[in-house]
Amino acid sequence: MALHFGALDTRLLQLEGGPGGWSVRTASIYSAQGKSRHARAAERVAEERKSLRLLGKDALIGISSDAVSVNLVPIDEHNRGRIDQVLKDTATRSSQDSEGLEYRYLPITGTDMAGTREDLLLLTVGASELRRCRTATESLGLRPSGMEMGAFPIARALKEVHQGEEDPWGFLHLGFSQSLFGVVHGGEIRFLKPMQLTGSALLSRLEEALNCTELDSLNPLLENASSGQENGIDSTTIANLHQQSVGHAVEILRFLKSDAELLAQEIRACLRHFATRNKGARMSCLELTGFGASLPEVEAALGKSLNLPVGLAAPFEALGIQAPSHIRAEEHLWCAALGLAMRGEA
Amino acid sequence: MKTADFLPLENYQLHLERRRTPKRIAILSVFALACIIGSQAVAWEATSTEQRATEAETPDSESLAANVELNDLFTEMSEYAVSLDPLAQHLDRPTCGGLLHGLAGACGTDVSVERVRWSYELPTNRSRNSTPQRELVLVVTALVESDEALLELPERLLEFSGYKKCRTGSTEVIKGRPEALRVEIQLRGQREDEK
Image 1 (tube, each protein chain N blue to C red):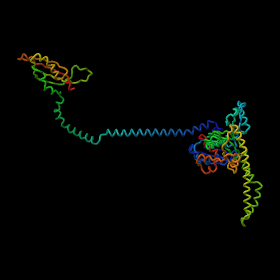
Image 2: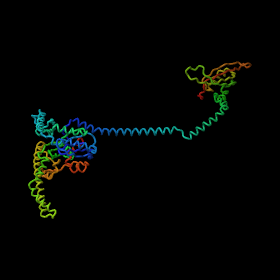
Image 3: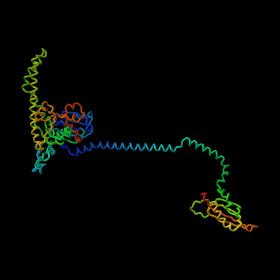
Image 4: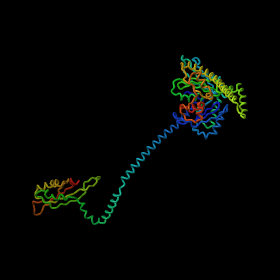
């Protein structure tokens, strides 16, 4: 079973069947935030354990992206001999944890055109986060069998959707606390970088737009409308209210669109880096996942700015996985859990 | 897809091993099921063959009835056995009747057969380990009126009778007939056609 400890909620997913005929056996969400979210989620899972019909004891755990520091470490010929020290230093600089740090790395590109430089993806996570994930899982009587950062399961789930494609494709995970942009080519992650704009930042902008000064101009009209209920509403008031609300919505969308365009600029920079490292390879499409992916204007603005097909990830639909309606309604939020559940099969 | 797992690699490898185990159990179960089905088929075949053999060996009602009737007949016959046995005694005698018919002619001229006696005897020179086998002894007593006939008589009798051995036994001069001699020829063994 897949147990993904996200920043806002913990998702539990278990599939049954096999490649070509998957279906969701169990899927549930437990809202929990903060550092104690693992334990709280585990308590709630324990309460519902019997009704969940879980099969087996092996759990593949997903760590929230915000708990993991992601760094691209270029290894040149001159520092290849002290690669361990370079990685350790980078990991120590990138994160802090009183219980210590754990880091893993994997090469994401081959040597560059000169054959002298290699990019390593360094992932650093605090030991306390790992302990919390492990303890929460073990408290449920489950065996932790794997523990991955969210980006890898997401890429794995979407990789199945893009099976057979030769061109590289990308995914943008707009999580609440952290957003990540990754490029997958040849079935492997070739680029992964945290983005500056996160889901929470988008939400703040939206909130800012809602609380902007122009909203104050609506208040008298709304008061008129409320008081006019008894004596009949003035048609002029309704027209004004409608006009003002439309204008306000447009303003909100403009806020979001400008943010999405900022995000697109950042992605373009990443793509330039990717192209130089991969002999001018161009990304064929971009899949959006995570909390911020479904916000209005994000998809359209990114598509327009990047001049690429951009779409909300829907792996369950694309892979023909039979799933309940609540999963189908927000497939882009289930990508990490799906990728974890498909590990070893995909 | 390559990934960065923050748990030791052994955990995931054990997980994969556990995932394979049900598949292995399923394969073994299918194999065991196939074996059971195979053994059941062999057992069924053996049972049906045994049944056929039993049915083949079991006499049918007609033969059982005939057997009972036969037993009744033997029981009935046994009551008359005491009176019937002497009638069958001759069946135990040697069958030399055929010889008597031409014996006189076979001896040739100047020979007249006086007496013929036959009996079964055990051979005297048999080996200790061999199974005793009765020999037929045919004793012919004849009057011979010439020396030539006397010398030829054993050969003639052997040739005629087909016995293996021939021995000239006692000879006796007859009073009042100086040209005649009573001779006893003993033939032993079985005739070729009686073996």
